[in-house]
Length: 132
Image (cartoon, rainbow, N blue to C red; front, side, top):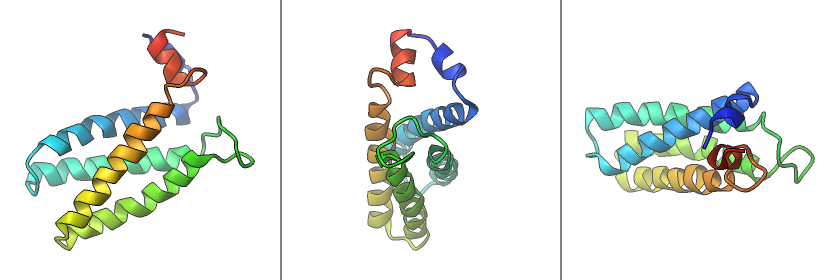
């Protein structure tokens, strides 16, 4: 394992990856921590900011091109940028089930599932994991 492929990647890929790493770690904390507390809200705002960074930075990454310079990950970025504020709004309106459903969906699909695809051969994270 080596971080060299990531550290020599473009700055936007580095921002995208490190924001995703941070969001993944904080997401795990959020899933296991008590809900509705000040730490939950504080970590949640940080997590939301990281998710915005992940989604927005994705628009400048065009390594997979299915439709011109776009790919399904760009659709996921749009869905993230819609779902995230809707889920925050649900929390602010004390709609706990809607908030929980939206945030867990973002964690599972935008971080875990999409993140798993970054480990396919030929991708930067595969090179990080395998050492080249």
